[in-house]
Length: 118
Image (cartoon, rainbow, N blue to C red; front, side, top):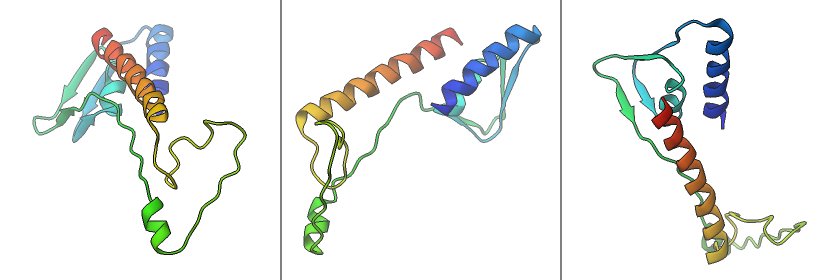
């Protein structure tokens, strides 16, 4: 993710420059912003700052019923059986849901490890 890239770049910067890094959070320090701040040596937050929201989310939708109502019949030509996973044009099956959940769980564990280290 972009947050992970910035987090690691800050870690490299700190090591190369041997200077302290201070994160300043003014409005929101949630999710990716919080993740990035974990690379800092110190975090300063305004008293009205909202921080936290440690987690990972993936949003999908199933628009198949809506498309059927307006007469649209999508067709997908794919290169493999999992290529259309998460398509909004059909319901997600149990196997696909399990694959996505595994990915989300892995990313969440990575997020937690960054927070614990920070």
